[in-house]
Length: 165
Image (cartoon, rainbow, N blue to C red):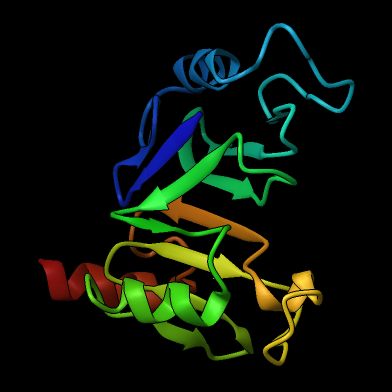
């Protein structure tokens, strides 16, 4: 299955801002019924047979963010435009995402990157050298889609509101 990141709207059937009930149903629709994982937690996350994890984050009954974790094989792929975010080296993902939007290293974790205008966030455990055998640092481990401002502190949220007013 191919999933397409569409920040800040969502991923596949999961749309930021939908009700928790609708988000639960959309998450459930991504489950492979022929191979349900014992690790699945309805209303929280599912694991597809490829190892792809899809997790939803709701607050006050509304979907706030969707996070996906790197699958173990290529039967499930995750794209932003034409960029396969888990199959390509992290450095290449960043370079190719820059063709579409601003992306910057996270201020507290330079191995991770955020496209703040969309909110699209890429994470890996550490920044690795150019060794593909060092998967945790060579490839991104997770990607998160949310509305811009998802990571804002209360002061940053107030500033964002005043700029948009």
